[in-house]
Image 1 (cartoon, rainbow, N blue to C red):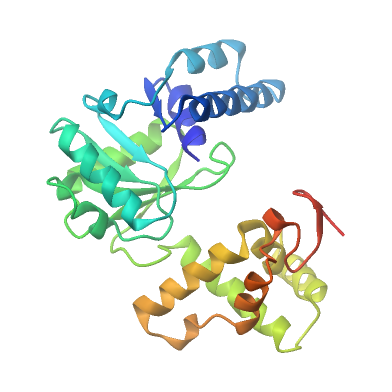
Image 2: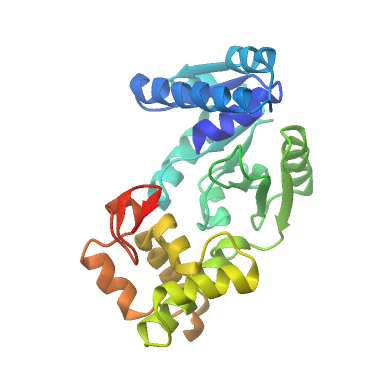
Length: 277
């Protein structure tokens, strides 16, 4: 995700610093960007000049202090509140007053992250979708004290990198897309687990009936059953509403190591990340 966001900004002409803990991780990210740009070039979506300019706009570092003078930081680390709080506290202590701090979190509280800083008006969520070059959407999430000026600057950045932003006016777990999508997937799991239909029938019905590219159980395997389970539990904890109760089959599958594409088995069995049988 970090590489994808960096690529989008670099293609739009921004000077981008790609920061990670170790140089080999940075090199992996830059290599990923190079390969993705080649694919876009082969498809005629960018020119050779676009690719060279984007690569020239990228710089890698392991030194967090090199971010002290930037206008915008977009954090894209693991979905762990403690890790994010630590990073935002460090960024707040070293970044200039003008710097906006954004998190690419897909579900965590922006207000809680912002509370670790002294700039709660300049902290917000910017949730990109993976792969970044494929999806045009960015969810902008307003924390309790995020200023309108910060929101407008984030919207302008999204426009400049060719993304369509939507505003989540009040944070809640899952924001817009994942809150709706994961509830949809959970209901499909209930239909399957309760014997209402076979998994293939459920996915076929949704694809043909609603015009979706993937059925809900196929989508679940792609996202990762463990990630979906954690998110639904988060919804349940926050809203205290039984509609966010995960079906026991989901936790059973996770305990068995059936996580979806990433583990080779979920609702379907996978020979490789893009192939089912």
